[in-house]
Length: 319
Length: 319
Image 1 (cartoon, one colour):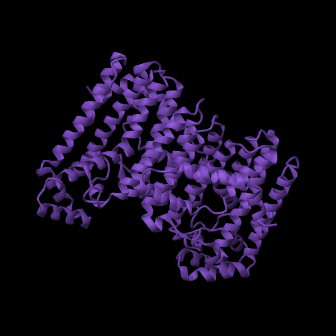
Image 2 (cartoon, one colour):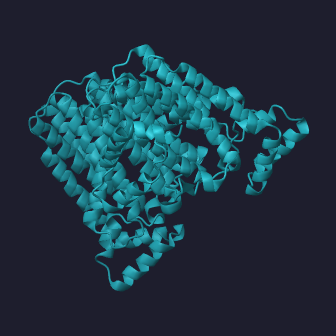
Image 3 (tube, chains in turn red, green):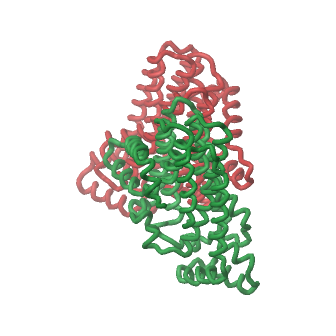
């Protein structure tokens, strides 16, 4: 099973989403159009649109409403990526130079605003306010999660529970909303929508844990983006939290000193220690258990083919 | 005639708007609530909510829909202020320290996002998508205007026409939308809505020209915010554009050198030259002519008291 099979299954619908996405982000101003075209290159796996479409196809028919919701979700996500790159001072994203690296932080801030604005503009083209209301409630949650994450930077007593609560807010909430709305717009029963929401929530948490593991132990070539930014920003993620709550006082002091220096020279040593202590492995196991929960949440009432693809899609996150 | 008379006329409705504003920006997370409370202090003249309410009262009754639109417009505006402070590296805003100065640029970026998100969340509580659609179209325009402004920084051949086009996008469009929606939600005829929109557009342009004049010649104590940021960011505004298109080649070279140095030491001299050459006066005159156009656009079908207040409100902008 490859991601390719999922893409094949929803290829036609994804093309509609892409067209709608590009159409919404059109600008008559050449300079704005250039910037938007560059952002378009950041479109990666399109996980969020995929989940809208799969949740929809599992329960009924895919309609224009789904294309809109899928494009909106991706725009919201890209807006957070562009602003995250400002926050992280990242230079590279999906093998391209980031907007802030190319045009400065100021352009990146405004461009992120333009993306979120277009997201709500597109969403308000739907007949009802239902999707707008839920998506904006979700973006409230995402922003609060980002603020909490910022607040806890440099705080070495961050607990696993608090880490997971932040991950739920800043990443999993939008993914859960995609699944919920995909099913709802297909006329699924409320319990089915909620079960898919639960699938998305668990998938989202696992996804973020693995993303954090990649930032710690990954290869920039393979990942196609700047890594190590969590360490340099004193941002504890699951491996670090696990290490600090299991190491000796002396080890704790060394690690905290390393973190507080925020020097790129310490990054390899930091990653090495967390790996040796089994803390990276622990994080992977936790991600795997969230994937199990996601698979468990999937409602059996979905059509067989979609059910199977969503089951497998979950596995790919930790593969 | 004072602003006080306008406040008196819509005092009850403004209180409703303030309550709704605070209610929407509530957070259970103490740290987020603290940040939002600090942003609340930036609420200044509340020009945009005032215009929603006055446009409404001029055409019919003020309803909950107007309170929502007014609070949404103020939230959108505050979001741009918070992000502008990041872009301008401003330390002071409405006599308070800016979010970026207090909590860093990162918190300011996310907080601006949270404000815009809440704005759309509140707006999507309305029965129809109409206001959401127009407001998000307007925020698209505002962001494009901000991008254009950034693009033309350090460009000394900026024309008055281009400057005015940017001002229309980044400032006047939202003020115009406030007037339009205020009237529309009261059931006014389309030509009345458009006339009020035209009033708001001209008022907004005049307002921004005067804001730029204040940044150049104002007193920080009186203005309650960091001034001189346009000069330090090589941002030409109307007085500078007028000076450069009327001075001698030698004067032009001197001014351009001054601008490109971006040193705070040159700021007084820059302002002095523009003042002596009559360029500041020219900008004031242009603002006054936009105010005339605003007053001229006001539909005579508005109820007498509101009509008079909107006529006078326009004068206050250039007073």
